[in-house]
Length: 275
Length: 339
Image 1 (spheres, rainbow over the protein chains, first blue to last red):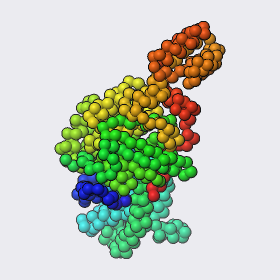
Image 2: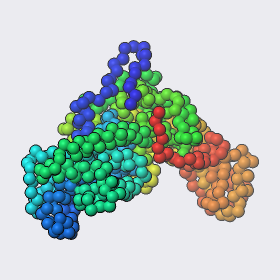
Image 3: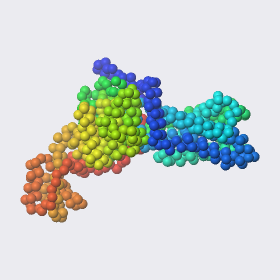
Image 4: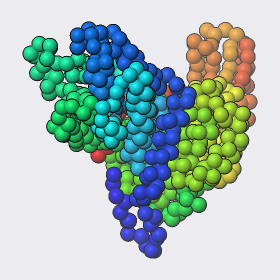
């Protein structure tokens, strides 16, 4: 934004400091996060993805496909698939942000925010804060359900928290892409459509749901570069205590940093320009 | 108290809440604003009257820092719209053409949120929300989501939201467009109350009647240019405060009636074969009597007469000698780039 410069005035005039302090910024982000959470109360369907998806996916994959994998060893498949599902939780939820942002622009509420004396990034950061809480809830539901089905944590709580954290870090880097989509496409439906179009091949063309060694060569090549595979592998190693940890974690962090470095400035610039 | 503007007049002439000079704004090749000048004196209401596409909303968006002008200067409460947007935002309240409230939040939560964003402490934000809900007769609906509100209730909530920070200057962008007459009157009552309490208001409207009800001064804008401005009384004298509508018994006589009035020096008479009405702007009682006398004296059979406040079209006709035409450009561009 422009910094205010004081025009030469005939008499000394008290110039208010236009900058918004850290505590004010945090207060604004807090108030806007509260708004995002209050919206859920009126629109409980918006929580379906966070609450039901982990349950539906777990049931579907463990019981529908689980029997056909690992020579019918469902327990082995649970240990394989559930960490992968945990890994992608942050990302699937992140994609909901764009839809929400799009509808804020459709209604006039964004104009209201933009005429208030608040930092322009507050609105975006509050979206991320609310999404983080949603992703945490979703992860908790997934893990509770998984443990009920007999999933075994073979390492410890620190590794579990690390896996959840990694999923969130990756998800929060995807949030910027989602925001960019939300501000670039015309309608909320279009945002949702494009998000799904990107999400589905990424999810299934990875090692989340099935080992990649039976896939044809070209698909294996894709799964290797797909960051979701690395994410699933990292999560698997963290929860099951076998396989390398440092390498896949590193790759995921690099992807996250790269996505944030590229898309966060684009999203913020787009947000400022948007009328 | 924080969140309330206590702005020193750093620039601009004392006594003017809004000062606009030579504001130009292009969207692509169309000139939405083509050198607009206007001033709104502290504590008064200025109505910005014009047809769709005249540039009214664009000007309000410039003055509320949503878009930047390409040329010209504008000060609101002494703050420069381009160089001091953050301070300026503390001095203004905006109610747009559409209600800019969060539909999924209750009336109370909407107002509380704005209070917090204006840095009111929790307790004060709460008290202010309750106070404004009461004042705008929304207390009963306070806990319901705004999406369940009627059009008038939403508009009232929107007005309440723009008043949380007790702004020195309020922009009301077509506050009654699309409302039924009863709801429109509710909104007018509220605006009059705010003005009585000392707010400075910039009101945009397409209705002469609305301007007459609410404003002290009037600026008429067309295709991004100011074509007339002055006190309501002055312009009324120019335009004719009222319009006489005559319904002849034989619509075929309409052209003859108009010609007859022209011969007697009443050149602003118009007629429409579609409505079967002859319309004559009237400056005063004497003129009214004269027109009736002329028509009666020629022996035209008259089925009915009525008087009404002139329409935007009639105002334009009186000022420019040609009818208002909506500019062939979108009223609100989807997006543009801020330099």
